[in-house]
Image 1 (cartoon, rainbow, N blue to C red):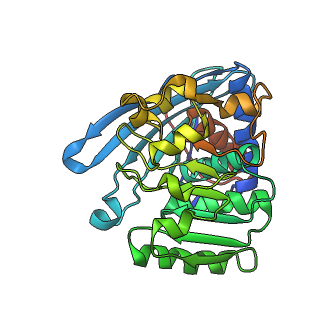
Image 2 (image 1 turned 90 degrees about the vertical axis):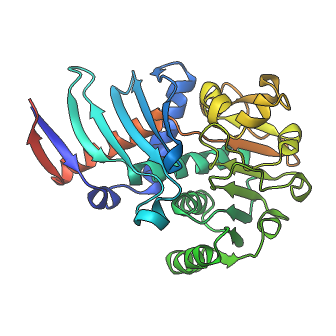
Image 3 (image 1 turned 180 degrees about the vertical axis):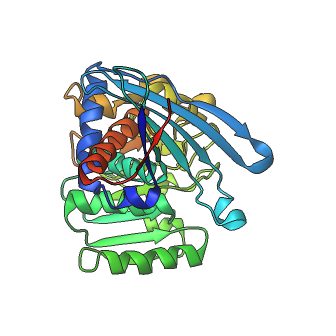
Length: 331
């Protein structure tokens, strides 16, 4: 039995954000229609090292696609070890035999499929004439979130970027200007208020455990993609925003324990009744997304194993067709 091995560098050249958005949208629809098996992700916490490890698995029945991912989140990695905050490994499984088809780096896949989810959330929940985006956080996730928004809209008038480290956001702005020259004016701002006020789409991608975005800064019609709160205790939004908003999760079980809504839920500030639905139901046409120009909409993303599975399958198929990667005998 030969198993394909794929590195991050090989994968980066195989997939585009447009392809990943298409694959993830299909996965959302399949889950919304009940054709996916996806246990809630499990966590191991390493408090001594300010990190955690998660396992994520899924099977998309009609797509005959299954995968298991092991992924960490260690916010101190960049400064301490010159490593990414998030690293991941994915095993793509052949459902017919249960054996691995491929073992691949999942770090870029994780970034791309999360960016794709943000883009799709904007497709269903943001105003179609959105022109201004505000990014709270300037790490790897901010890059693929911006990539997806520019793929969705074609161009934006203005992108405002804030992060706690001035050097990080200025590096981000410089790189993104070079990458998206002419598609958006991209500027660094000195505080969170400047990033989110008078903004059509807000994207938060920080590991914060205290609210950064205040209710008074959010005007009617704003859409917010909450990406950073992906573990228990994390939150980036003032909970009052959630009381004003149409809340859409990616998965109720995961979001209630580790998404943007987990802290307000545990404190009794909101309840399940305050959550409109999940993005999979909306993608499948079972529930409506944005229904008015004045709605405030919030998408809370925890990351779904089905996103990893379909993106890994996309990578595998393209690698096989282009004869990329190495094979090993496993059995």
